[in-house]
Length: 303
Ligand SMILES: [Zn+2]
Image 1 (spheres, rainbow, N blue to C red):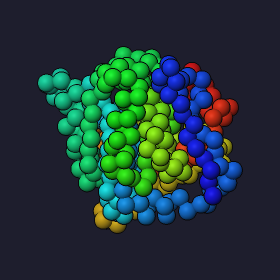
Image 2 (cartoon, rainbow, N blue to C red; image 1 turned 60 degrees about the horizontal axis):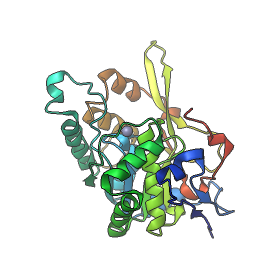
Image 3 (tube, helix red, strand yellow; image 1 turned 45 degrees about the horizontal axis):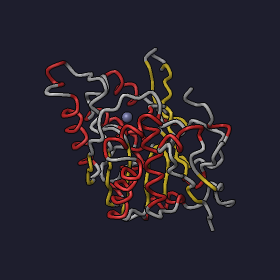
Image 4 (tube, rainbow, N blue to C red; image 1 turned 90 degrees about the horizontal axis):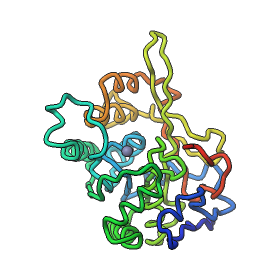
């Protein structure tokens, strides 16, 4: 049986304690590193799934597996998005970015949640200006009364939803190394721990965007794991068909969501991702119980 435990402590320096130095997470169970543990069946069997991310569009790196879970297998899915994403750039013509980016992205996020028939909890923790996950997390916390209050807010939603599984970012890289992604991962793991969720039931996203050049010289983009040699990785094959959408595969939902989040992607980005080779159409994941504190392979990925 797994013995993993999320060893995240809220210390005097708040979220910086968890993010700084990479000493984030787990006292892992000794038997958690096998790769054939029924993880996919476990996802399909989930009645309720919760996703915790930082911005509208962050769900894209998980979209294929969520599509199969929420659309095909019928899990009730809840997206907790911590901010409205108002601090990013708008890639639409200026008039389409009105009245402001937060409003535009909030609407995009609502449409994305509809794809999954998901409940959307779109929070407004604020547009923080940070260069580190420590700063990002602490600025969020300061906007709601401190670290304990912030963790409690998320833990309360976990307790209300009572998810069978939680998906979030891996704090060590946050998929793109965005400080707020990494802070969202720390926060989600802390809240899951506070809500007595098993780290075995928490999956963190391990996708890294890879961009290649296709035969025609055009860019081709897809996902690969940050640390491909990690034997604990679970890799969802997004070439799997979606029976409720004949003729489509799970990867197509990535393309669909990029089109929905039009303020964040140029049409050429969408074309590149649509052209991803089969081997790049994957969603790599780790159970939080397999995230080993101080794993040297994951140190300094974002430096
Ligand atoms: Zn983001």
